Length: 120
Image (cartoon, rainbow, N blue to C red):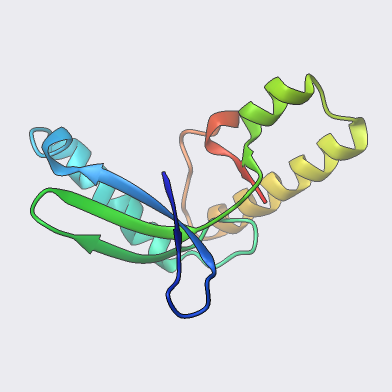
């Protein structure tokens, strides 16, 4: 991930870059990425990262995502050691709200882990 700034208003975005050479040899990986992009385009929930744009050239696919400054939950757990019961409940509520939103749309995450949960 790379941090980028809008030329219009200086707002921050996260850019996820995928090198095509790493996925083109595996049709399942290409299909998975296409499906992920398709799903992310339709999701609109305050607890789910937003996909704003997808740019593609011969070598790379660039996903322009909402920038969340809190880092991965995994990193925060390593730093803090533990969360208070109140903080843990708040985090769990956010996760469960996002999951409920997805499940109502018949979308399943399939890879929930602290490394994949980004904090605001």
